[in-house]
Image (tube, rainbow over all chains, first blue to last red; front, side, top):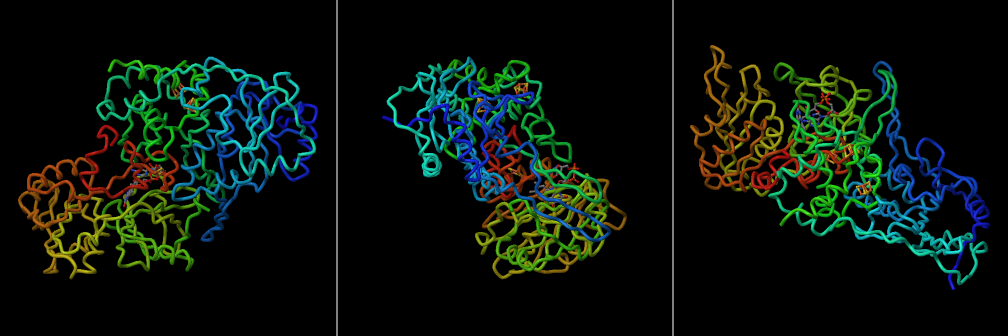
Length: 337
Length: 278
Ligand SMILES: Cc1cc2nc3c(=O)[nH]c(=O)nc-3n(C[C@H](O)[C@H](O)[C@H](O)COP(=O)(O)OP(=O)(O)OC[C@H]3O[C@@H](n4cnc5c(N)ncnc54)[C@H](O)[C@@H]3O)c2cc1C
Ligand code: SF4
Ligand code: SF4
Ligand code: FES
């Protein structure tokens, strides 16, 4: 017997959480691109999507984040630090790769200096992950040693029932236990089976990839030029990635008032590393592509003990020139040794 | 919050060379000053900013032995530096820091010190120089080799004069060929060449080297010729930075985050980095 949430209780569940002060966010197909957004009832959710086009990262590390508001008049400067909204949130129906992405980025935002903007949101959020029942050709969670039902980064895990009536519900953290407590009267015991998770074939050998990247000899290999020839440096793969975290800090406004903002940036752009002198350490697209791969499968692991990729496949799914990370990692796997 | 800077008051401004200014800044708030005093060591850097324009990375050019204020010296080159250069006494600017690692000057105690700087890179070197000269008894011979393109481009001219007068400092000044003036009595030649002629002994000596990449490259070769080992040569790397605290992802050379593990490195550490990423 396990606890289940029936679909016809979902609206009550949402209402109960809202009453307890939470906003409820779920996958929605609302704007140009599917994303996580606030919902009022179950029918607002697009739970059948294999994966939203935009990632849940947007809700923790927004595309633009106001840091400081300033006002300048003659010799007087007034500035005010801006903080993220102090709002409790439930994320319902997060795919395991997106939830893992949050867990992967936690150590980065926390090492030594704690990024309050990230953690304030993290601490106020409960993540309800949902196991996948379908995958597409781009999914590659298994290649990075995760799975379609991984609980990494989740507070509560949902497994869709085979009969389609609802979900098995398991708390996987204290925060998750507490959240379920608040709706325990809406859950019931059942022996209904969960739907099977899809088979996701491994697309590359991550051990081989890490070994090749770890060999200093390969840093200047011709491989990087050949494999990245098609990249137009648009940055889509980084913006749509649940783990990419690079940003810029810019003052936006006029001479008298404005806002200092933390804006998404991308290692795909030439300006990203350009010195004022004009010197640019990563002066070709191939060196920037190398940086992205090295960062994800070598540097990040060296610093934080995990690879900075959760296998969501978005970078490949959405690349305008059909490139993405999978092809590169496959090619590295297949290099003669 | 993490990206909130300290307000700082400009207390004086000094023109060092054409397009190069030094600002002396004092803390507006006592608790910010206490934080700085507790955390600053020579070699560290900060993000100096001005609302409406942004932030720029400079070293803290004042030594860790003088923490009542912060001095920064910068070349006017873009948006932020131009606005900073146009500030007046009493204006408020901002500072985030001190960030990064430091020159381990207590490990230099009992040793000879050789400082080598080129052009606008005297500021970071000057911070270490004064940190050591203010505790002169702890160190043996002190040699400073400093060069600039022309006589006008030499920065901290008043301090060069002061070091020249001291008999416990050996100052070797040079300008590039063609950069001398009729009344120039010091060396004419590039830093690496002049360094080789001065031939300081590598015996029990630590070298601190800051300058543009091309000068560093040739000076390292000269130091090696003189018998210095890469472990005893310290230098700084200056990649483009935004956050200064290991988050924004842009300053790394290979796996090394310059803003967190640097900007101070031994030449041996720099040589171990992927050279194509420098
Ligand atoms: C650790 C460190 C110490 C430094 N110390 C000094 C110093 O003491 N004196 C000095 O004159 N210069 C120093 N620099 C270089 C200095 O940061 C740049 O020249 C300066 O940022 C130019 O700013 P700008 O806004 O006027 O130029 P713009 O070209 O308008 O700058 C645009 C943006 O790019 C960033 N940027 C561009 N080039 C660099 C760069 N090389 N390093 C960091 N950020 C960059 C700036 O922060 C700015 O936000 C140092 C750099 C680093 C990393
Ligand atoms: S790999 Fe594709 S999505 Fe990524 S920057 Fe290059 S062209 Fe854009
Ligand atoms: S690198 Fe690609 S597959 Fe990996 S997490 Fe980012 S977008 Fe997903
Ligand atoms: S300056 Fe942002 S990571 Fe180093």
